[in-house]
Amino acid sequence: MRYQNTYVKLDTRLYHRQPPTPLENPRAGHFNNQVAQQLGWADDPDLMARWVDIIGGQYVPTQFEPLAMAYAGHQFGQWAGQLGDGRGLLMAQVLDNNDQLQDLHLKGCGLTPYSRMGDGRAVLRSTIREYLCGHALTQLGIPSSNALGFVVSDTPIRRERMEAGAALMRVADSHVRLGHVEWIASFAPDLLSEFTDYMIDTYYPECRDSEKPVLAFLQAVVQRTARMIADWQLTGFAHGVMNTDNLSITGSTLDFGPFGFMERFDPAWINNHSDHSGRYTYQNQPAIGHWNLNVWLPHFMRLTQEGVTRDSLAECLAPYEPTFMQHYQQGLCRKLGLPHQSDSLTLAFEFLTLLEDNLLDYTNSFRALLGLVAADEHPYEQQLLKIMIAELSDEARQVWQDWSTRYLAQIQQPSSPTNDQVVTDLKTNNPVYVLRNSMAQHAITAAEQGQFEEVARLFELLASPYTVQDIATDLDSRPPTPNAPQLPISCSS
Ligand code: AMP
Ligand code: MG
Image (cartoon, rainbow, N blue to C red; front, side, top):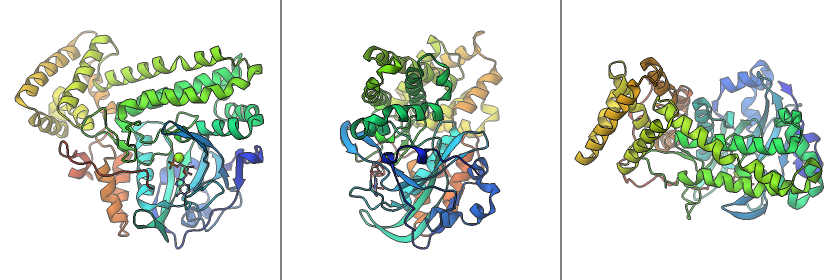
């Protein structure tokens, strides 16, 4: 691998260097060969032969320089003070095949100085959820952390019950969170300038060409965050814990524990059972992204020499909403195979209302449009459409009839793309498979009995989320019955 350990060269107040604490008897859970290729891990026989020991914390290759990062954050809207990597270590940074810097981060590595009341460990169920979700989002085309692999062990972990300790080698373009800057502002303000330079040079080098690189950087973070959240909304992804310590400065999805993919469409849906006030509902995500950036940006006020003023920060934040709206609305039109214009949006919002009023499945309903537009070549989607219509009341069926007639007419408009293009757009913007909670749970139950075949099958399925596959089971496309109690997904992990 092409190592480029740069974080370890920063001021030593920013991290604590230490090795992981080994897990007992680590065993393979799953290994992501594609990520191994991308990182150059696959070219190193020692790394390939010993990946279980490495993720199990038993062996640290010589070029790794493990460290726990300090950061802070706002959790559920409240200042939480110092947090930091309480159960993770940045093991190494490497340039991947695309010359993109990637962090290798071991989650579940044992105690660090930032563990607070925790045990430094991660349980198998949350490890599997994070592993499969990073993979799912990446393959859906949404910027996200991914993982090289995970292991399970004999180390007992106490949560609501006793569980097996596991560890995941997370791979992300950065582990610098909004909360890093919050930590610096509170505990080492003299480092802000150096750290800002690091963030720009490492993650936003193109901003150096700007007259005011810091302002260009801040605006770029705002825009990337807005685009990422628009992608979440389009896919029906609810992150679950959008605290400032869980948002990456690169606009890449990070730290999802109690996440979920929308099934029956309910904008007020919250997947995280620990979120009692519903702060992080699906529909709140865009506003929370703005809230997070709004508490983050003022920390840069002290960089007056870089041209940062209250007004210039407001200008950095201003593009958040238009960037989000544009990306979201464009994406929504593409999900219908229509050009980005107001009559397409009207149809899109009417469709969402139909979904909401009838608690229809978000993923399946969009995909079912292929069964309407090109039924003959799409038997699977035709079936989805049948199921969808069968769920409608007589009254709602009328609404659907009216909507689908206008939709089909819109597609035939001269200004609309060709039929082939519509079909392609429908196919490439509406996944067949997302990681439903019930799918993950099924794989977890088997894994807790030592069976990892279901994890492997889901991994393969989610590798091509836009393609109907033979390896799919009913469970992979079946939403829960309407108003069924949700599987309890909490912050416990
Ligand atoms: P999270 O809500 O998972 O993003 O975690 C918030 C903070 O708590 C981070 O600083 C984590 O490193 C820390 N943390 C979470 N779980 C544990 C644990 N089991 N042991 C130590 N620290 C933890
Ligand atoms: Mg976190």
